[in-house]
Image 1 (cartoon, helix red, strand yellow):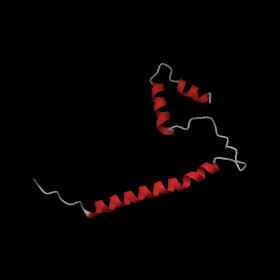
Image 2 (cartoon, rainbow, N blue to C red; image 1 turned 90 degrees about the horizontal axis):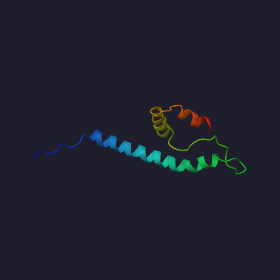
Image 3 (cartoon, helix red, strand yellow; image 1 turned 120 degrees about the horizontal axis):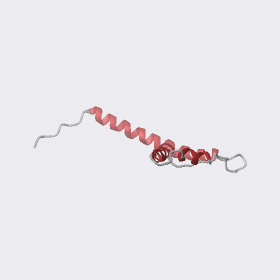
Image 4 (cartoon, rainbow, N blue to C red; image 1 turned 90 degrees about the vertical axis):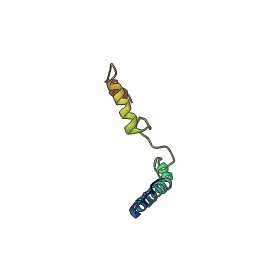
Length: 85
């Protein structure tokens, strides 16, 4: 059985940088989340008025819905549904 060659030093450096970047993004997300929720309300504590719509996955969900309507018998249903919101 042939011996495996050790990975070059740059592979370990790239892996470490990727891990540190992922940890930094995760920490930033956790620390900034409460601030976002506070900004979503008015000064008197009432919830902010948001436009009607979905809080789902905007790009993936809307794209899948658009493609499914495009192949249906009535493709304009995608626009009609959003116009009623």
